[in-house]
Length: 276
Image 1 (cartoon, rainbow, N blue to C red):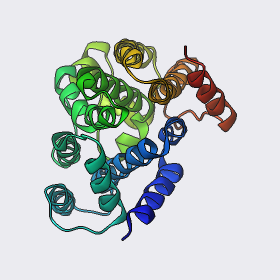
Image 2 (image 1 turned 180 degrees about the horizontal axis):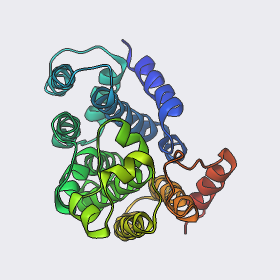
Image 3 (image 1 turned 45 degrees about the vertical axis):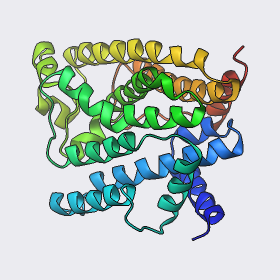
Image 4 (image 1 turned 30 degrees about the vertical axis):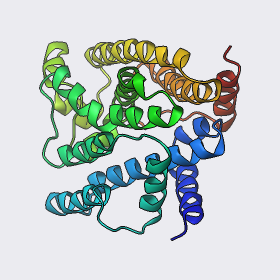
C-alpha cells in the first residue's frame, strides 16, 4: 500500500471514530497531523481488540501479540502500519510507548478491578500516558515526556468517570476498590445505576483528582510550538468541558456519557487557537 493512501485511511478513521482527537489535530500542519492520526489508529486498534465482546480473551491476546510483532518489524501492509512506519521514520516516536499501549490492552484481558489508585495509575500510564509520550515526539518536544504522560493520564481519568456504565457492560470497574469501600459504594450500585449521595461524593473525588492531573498536564502547553500547543489545548479543553457536563448532571453517568455539540467543540477549537 502506498504511504499517501495509508495516511488518507488513518485520517479518515480518526475523523470517523475519535470523539475529541480529530478536533485537536486539525490545527496541526499536515505532516504532524498525519503522524498523530497514525498513532491514533494504532491506539484505536488496540482498544477495539481489547474491548471486542465477540472475542475470547485468548484470541484478544493473540491479536494484540500480532500488533506487537508488527511494531518489532514483522511485515504488515495494513494502512495503519504503513502510516505508522512512515511516521516513525519522520519523528522520534519511542517504540516503548507503542509497546506500552499493547501492554495496556493485554492488561484488560487479565485484570478488571484495581485495588488502589496507585495500581490504576499504572494502567492509565500504559493506555493513555503512552499516547501522550508518543505524540509529544511528533509535536517536537520529546524531552517533555513526563508532562505529556501526566496529561494522558488526566484524560484517561476523565474517560473513566464518563464511561462507568459502558465499562460495567464489559465486566470492568476502573474505580479503585478501596475508594468504593471508603465512600460506601458497592458494585451493585453501579450495576443498577444508583446515583446516591455516596456515589456523588465518590465521583466528586474522582473528578477533583482528574482536574488536578489535568492542571499539571497543561503545563506542557508552554513548552510546545504554537500550533502544537493549540492542538493539545483543544484536547484538554474538550475533556474539561465533558467533565463540566458530568458535574452539572450531579455525576449521573448511568444514562450515557454527556455529548458536546459540534458548535461547542468548534468554539473550544477556536479558544485553543487564541492562546497567546
